[in-house]
Length: 307
Image (tube, rainbow, N blue to C red; front, top):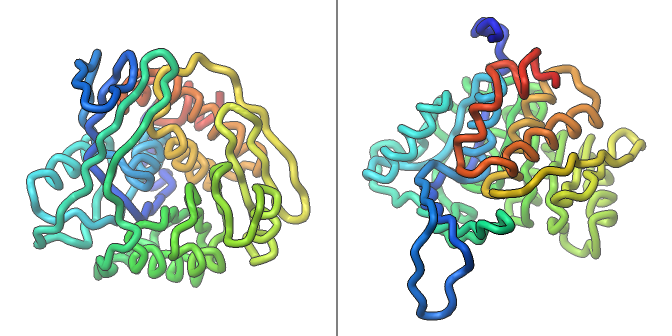
C-alpha cells in the first residue's frame, strides 16, 4: 500500500459547474414507447461534469473543491453527502435557498455500456459567485469550468487567469458562455462534437481556438485516438482498448484526470495518455463509483500517478 500523501503536497483543483443527482438504471434494452421495463441494476450518485471531474481528481490524490449551486432541499443534501464521501469539498453558491437540484435519469445498455441521459442543466443559471470564490482560486493549482452556472464560471476563470493559473474548459458542447471563457482558457478539452460557431469540423474548431489564444486544445473521440494542438505542435495519442461496460461519466473522468496531471509536470501527450487510461478504466467497471477503488491515493495503480 502506498504511504499517505501529505496534505500540503496534494495539488489543489477547483471545479466550477454542474452537480446533479444521477439515478442510473442498467437495462438489457432501451424501453420502447409506452413500455415499462425492469432494470438489472440501479445506482444513485452525484453527477454532472464538474462534480464527476472533481471526484476523479480527489481519487487520484488531489484536493478537490467543487463550486456549484445546490441549495438546501433534500436532493441537495444527498448530492453533498455523496461528494463528501469521495473527498470533494463543496462550496454551495445557493446555500440558504430552495433552488431545485437537477435530477438526471440515466439508462445504460448492458451489452454495450452506452448511456442515454435526460436531465435539466444550469447553462442559464443566474447563481452569483460565492463570497469565498476568489480565496479558493488563490489556493488552486488548476481550475476547471464546464460552462454551467455561467456567472460563477466567468468569475472563476477571470480570477485564475489573473493569477496565471491553469484554466481547463470542459467543452462537451457549445454553450453561450463559451465566448467569454475561451479568451481566459489555457486548455480546452473538447468532445468530437464540440464546434465553435462557423467551424465545420474538429480541425477547424481547434484552429479557431488556437487562433483565439488557447495554449492547448485536446479533442477526444471515444475509443479513437485523442488529438491535440499545443505551441504550434500537434499530434495524437492512442486510447487503450478495453471491454466497455459503462460509459457514464467517462468523459468527466478524463477531464478530472487531465486537470490532475496538468499539475504534475507532464507533457501534453503524457497528460492525455494518463487521462485516457483513467477514462478507459472508468468504462471497464460497472457503476458510478466502484471503479474508483482501483485508483490508489497516488494515481492509477499507485506510484505518484504513474502506471
